[in-house]
Image 1: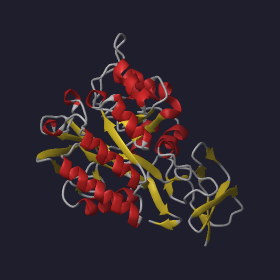
Image 2: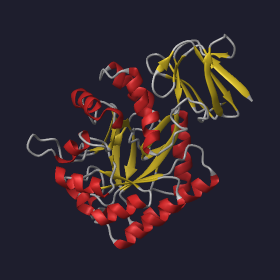
Image 3: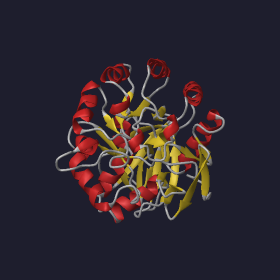
Image 4: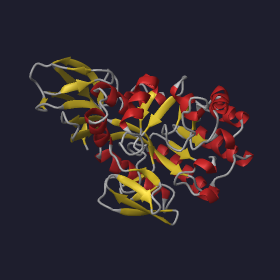
Length: 372
């Protein structure tokens, strides 16, 4: 089936293009052609690739790691799909071995059945530094052992993608190298490490950094820490664009320093896509108020932001250019996973689309050319 969308500016993954029509056949992009007036008239706004999110802890009322993991994955992918996210890595926060094994098994089943939107899994912990635990349960944080490594290597062989956030203090360079050699995306985070420790982990194979500035050793002029190692170098760097986790000035500095390496994540929790004002995380109540998710002591516990909201904050409040902000939510995270046919609107790419107002409001969502 041939479909044509016209009447909106088209973001192809790199730049905004005027006067173009997007042509799709059988769920794939055929071309960006001259607008001849034929097709569905979007009447303004922006037509962009569906968003790609590499850190999604929950959504639709479900939190990965609590309850049935198969049901949680389905609910999360569906909820975020309605918010414009075409592909995501459901993320398991620090958990025990039994829960981790159950989530990995559910992820493998989701991959085999082709769950829409499922791109793989992200394990955020348990191999973190308890000094930078954030909302993670300190009782479950522990160094990586041989059995953990074997479990991750086996999962990496069966999943389309596996990202693991760990602290250099909780895994050896040899363990990191083994994970990287198996195709695991090793990301550094929740760490109080020195710059030298971060560089050693990166030399061993870690090539991503988890939610820049948050739960990590800060940038000091004599002790650059993990933040300094992330801002300078080759690692691809995630950041939460909600105005809560990172203020405007450091956010802009990160955009300037990291450039193409910087990508956005929502770090969404169970309340995403719902009107709920609270949920439970490992027996602790998380409160939702004024765009923040916190433990009762005020500790941030994930983020309460969708990508359309993030786009509005980046462009209207942080002063980030529209093309840069869109790339951070589409092409760049897809590239972290090595996906050349996601997050872009080029020939052969998946026809996963979002229609946005000029202010960033979500107006329409399509998956494979079909309205979601």
